[in-house]
Amino acid sequence: MCIQEQGCIMFKKILIANRGEIAVRIMRTCREMGIGTVAVYSDVDRGSLHVLSADQAVPLGDPEPYRSYLDINKIIKAAQDSGAEAIHPGYGFLAENALFAEQCASAGLTFIGPPPQAIRDLGDKITARRIMTDGGVPVIPGISESIEDIAAVTADAEKIGYPVLVKAAAGGGGKGMRVVHNPSDLPDACASSSREAEGAFGNGTIFIEKYLNPSRHVEFQILADSFGNVIHLNERECSIQRRHQKIIEESPSPVMTPELRKKMGEAAVAAAKASGYVNAGTVEFIVDSNSNFYFLEVNTRLQVEHPVTEMTTGIDLVRHQIEIAAGKRLSLSQDDISAQGHSIECRIYAEDPEKGFFPSPGTIHYMKEPSGPGIRNDCGVYSGYTVPVEYDPIVSKLVVHAETRGDAVTRMIRALKEYIILGITTPIPFLIDVLKSEPFRNGETYTDCIDTHFSKWVMDRSNIQAARIAYIADELLPKEKKAYSFTKVMNSTGPWQTLGNWRI
Image (cartoon, rainbow, N blue to C red; front, side):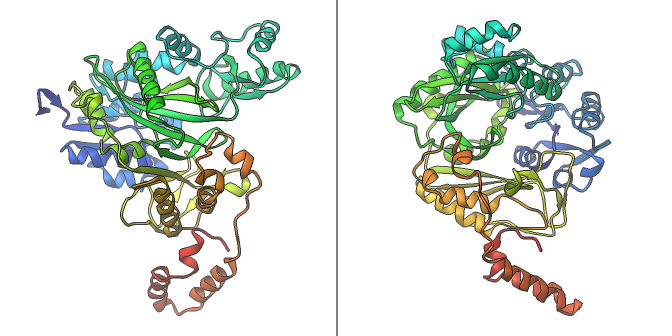
């Protein structure tokens, strides 16, 4: 049985094939829509927030991803056994796996995402470049063929002009990517890039394109239904990155003008139509110093940074994903889309920015989330929760919204200072320093910002002695008074408020 809604058959129960904050976020929209939710979890995630938040939970066993969250057969069986009619993949894991989408359909389950062929075509960056070229979307100068003959590629690279970027045709996250400044370095770069891509994605195919620096990473959110209607929901600036992975995103982009937004938005819609796209997706562009833009890739899923679009437009992207998957026409036209104010997102990871952002899993002894006007925290953890070593160490996504960019920056800094996470290392102090920096304040958010301005960053430890004193005082108190004292300290103004996270 399904729920009838506005001419389409709405799902009664959805399985979320993911974990952590994104699973919790999807469940919230399902609950608002009156849809039941099913969580899946590995052995180490038994006490995770997404499991506690779901109506049902199905164990997957071994924490190894390929034996749990990446096991297609286990996920489909969990959906069938629980009576779910659809599967939402979130992001990561199986979200961009064409085979998974196909097997969902074969099992009579609705995959809440794009068609398998679109996933397959756009997941191969070489194929995607060809589709965009044929669709009239500008692409970065490069070679839209896999590298086979190094001698021939060297000649092509000379025509493109150094520096060039060697890229893996599959996957993402900076793996299989090398910047080459000199022709003599190209053969080794191609070989190492291919090896890394083969190890990470099982596909060693690589290609090259012009390396644009300085440049910005600007993406457009799109929605497309199965009736040929496609719209965009404006842009997100995602240039603040470490190891080619985003850590701060905002909307609108500081570089954007109405004219540029119109051109890029039209290109994003054209990209979706050229690829036969359906559901929510993101078209990513590189914007050079002269405001020329070029297609980068399409993320065939919900983006980590989708909340900044939701905050500025007031549109629930997950709701539209579900409605489109259920066969409903888009309820919005391009003229309906307008944005108000400015939104910024900071990704909070269990990682140490002083050690190359190396993961820092462990137990969260105490956590206090920030609050107040214009603050949203998409969170998947709680006090006492142990961040496992097996998965991506994202803890939460802190999002703010304000009338202006300057106000949003100020609000985010305030929120970060109020965000207390004890027991693990997080980049909260680092994020504060980035937001306070002159380049960020001036909107000079280029993809090399972290490497250029923060490569030798160290945390200000001027208050560490105060933290030690607070810790020692708490340890010396009689046990029956500790809980009261700890809570009192936490709720008062002092080092606990200002340090963010600390270790003894």
